[in-house]
Length: 273
Length: 309
Ligand SMILES: Cc1ncc(C[n+]2csc(CCOP(=O)(O)OP(=O)(O)O)c2C)c(N)n1
Ligand SMILES: [Mg+2]
Image 1 (tube, rainbow over the protein chains, first blue to last red):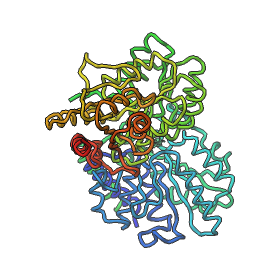
Image 2 (cartoon, protein in one colour):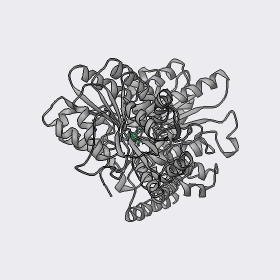
Image 3 (tube, chains in turn red, brown):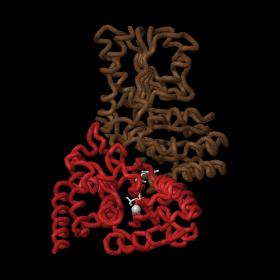
Image 4 (cartoon, rainbow over the protein chains, first blue to last red):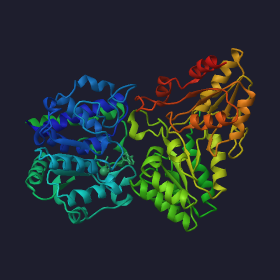
């Protein structure tokens, strides 16, 4: 499968859904899109036929506000009909603005930042206890790293040497109030996670090949959990959204929608050539 | 239609005071936009502290600053302040008795379709259960202004919940009856009393008008002061009217309903009906859709009132 083209197709679905619902977090959806595409179409042992398989890989979207990308991927993978997403964010829909495990394919609820890593530690520990073959994955935002619970989880992951656990940081350097380094800086992430007992891997987070190599390295790492710092661009794919804090949860106008769609379609076509 | 959200009024009042009082400080956790505090951050950068997405740190830092003479106003979504940093509120604010005012914004179900992580339909219960923590749910922007001014004049811990979007005025500009820690009588009546807080006060006021047209005289109490509760106003209502309805944007456990019932049952028992959100994740939707879904509106109150009298 051409994953690069797939990521631009998914972004179109996301743009459609957000434009229709007039709600969503498009900036983070687009920065994390390639990570999710790589996980769901290449790395993880998951699928609609495996939702009750005890050996399926486990995934938690810790930065739950990027649920639109996750929904569109799950629908594309056949976990539920794509038409279900027409109710996204509408009255009485289960397709709400954060992951909801009443939906097929979603393991855990999230939306309050700083929960994914400790929960993933719990899943990885359970896997070790059961000698189960599954691996656990979670994606955090970089602004999210200010939560103390992230570091408590990191401490436990290192302590228990959970080599069945891979965490990813969507390092787009933006959060709601602006640049992460101005709001609460966390440069030297390598040293920080390294000193907590994690094998730190760098990846170009909007480059599928780079991500595949990073996940391969994470899988091959023994005796410690792996932390992939994925350098990404918030809003990646639509030029006027890129690297702009305002696009964290802005809803595109009609003109912006057309322009964004045209760009994404062109990029999908180019990737298919 | 009023376009000014209650949380924006809090920012306005704080800016008015921050000019002359350098000890007035605001702390946010990547929440200056959502809590309407951007003007404060821009105009008073030396009196503004950003902690990043770290609500526990946020509340403890505020407590430390208060212990050294500052007057911190912590502005962050109600859902996180009332659960994630509840222990910081309990220990560092209430127990150590520091002069910290916790402003929970976009409270109740006003985050709508963002789901239960973002709802705070439990904040009266959690924050109210903390010894020494006062709890306020103002109804409109005019009352929010009076309340914020009153809070600036004292040095005790408090938690204030406001909603996300502008709401219709309950009171008229220039005619805003307000006495600190006393329920406001929105309208008087003799058959039944409707006790409401926050955004439900408007529905109660509308219900009283509908009931009047049907010959039922309803008193409406705006119980913005959940804690300390205005017990005298409740006892008086129980004595003077035949039944009491409570209505709140909160779950059924540990909210206004239970607090009022405790007073009624131990003073002057009368029939009561309690209108609340469910003890379950709320449906997705805009605030009004969610209220309507659970009958938390004027029509719902009217129906309940007719059952009672
Ligand atoms: C505990 C908690 N605090 C605050 C929020 C509100 N919030 C939602 S997204 C966000 C910014 C997230 O920034 P980042 O983690 O960098 O995510 P990304 O840039 O990938 O969107 C904030 C503060 C939240 N969801 N949870
Ligand atoms: Mg970010």
